[in-house]
Image (cartoon, rainbow, N blue to C red; front, side, top):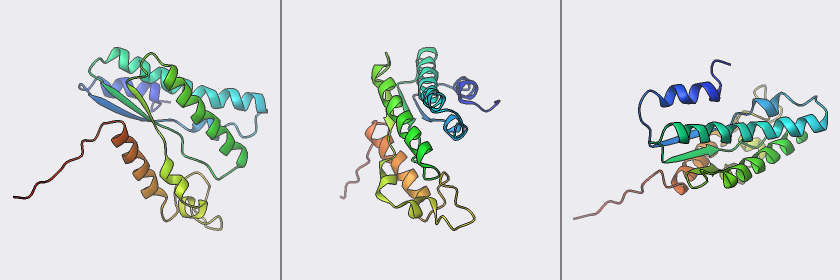
Length: 168
């Protein structure tokens, strides 16, 4: 709890003025709801994206130096088909809440599209591996694809200027 987004983001933002922020959507609610009744699963899966948007909105309101906030959606899951569905549901809710936000011009949702270009084995590793859990990106391309997705989202949000070199 001392490292939750609601507490840590304002703490970090109070250190100095920031022009842009990038926030990873927490995945703990999805991970912890596997054995709950379906209606409770949907409710908890919906809580995380709505809370994340509310925390970012508060940051935009309280710290006017912030011009842009990029929220990285939850990565896909391969550990359980039900949790994979709930993750998709949560990401859909996140995008919808961002669009409806009064700060929708300042909030961008980073999709992790490049992760979908690879098989589960390539992203998460072989299911026969001792490291495999279907959540963490232990596969050959998992971490790189995740990083590439975030970089693509940062560029599409306009946070990264493309440099050009000229020859003389």
